[in-house]
Length: 251
Ligand SMILES: NC(=O)c1ccc[n+]([C@@H]2O[C@H](COP(=O)([O-])OP(=O)(O)OC[C@H]3O[C@@H](n4cnc5c(N)ncnc54)[C@H](OP(=O)(O)O)[C@@H]3O)[C@@H](O)[C@H]2O)c1
Image 1 (cartoon, rainbow, N blue to C red):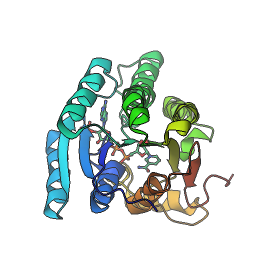
Image 2 (image 1 turned 180 degrees about the vertical axis):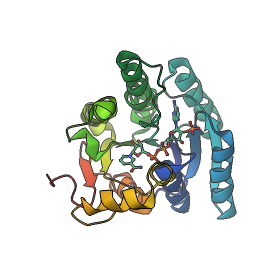
Image 3 (image 1 turned 30 degrees about the horizontal axis):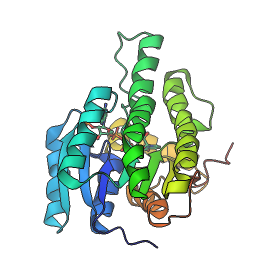
């Protein structure tokens, strides 16, 4: 497996949940990690402190990934300060269970697609030219098992945004392949994160787990491990790693 020590890794939405653990694991592997967030600077500072306390290197970076000029400004700043971004993990998402009651179907769809899917498109477009020039780049898009399953009405926008990420993966994988720039997707099932812990009572969580073939949710560490695999293995591109305890094939 490739040594990624010394690489600069940008993890979007790294201030909590899976993004936080992916950031911690990249830092353990020796990367300088940019902990991106949009709203909660305190959470991002905590992740940076955790990485630093463990001997790693990290910086918080506030940027709403759906804001095109802000994304360009972030990449320009990272280019100037660190000589660019080597590894991009598109993990940010709007919490799909926090729809404001005042939002119409169309407004909610636009909002979800804008952060979850357009955000990943914008960061990838900003990332690609320099990565191809340097002949090194790794993108991992964080999708969901919900990309492949029929969604209840409230989750249609989320599922569609995640399915769209597989299209991004194929497009950027093809563009980057001759330049040693890979792009892959990791699609988690139900993972016990802060968000799930807040949203589900222990009883409801246990009930949802009983419908998973492996009878448990995954851990953020298991997802981070899957994210690091195509970063360290430079011959995997355009692929999806489904990691969901069997939910992908279960009825
Ligand atoms: N948890 C699961 O069970 C599960 C299952 C399948 C797939 N996934 C996928 O795994 C990823 C992480 O999930 P999670 O549960 O850890 O997410 P989460 O707890 O909802 O955290 C979302 C992160 O995204 C950031 N964010 C929100 N809007 C943003 C924006 N406009 N620009 C930049 N950052 C933004 C948040 O930062 P602020 O708080 O600062 O806004 C936060 O750090 C997501 O892509 C999700 O779809 C999760």
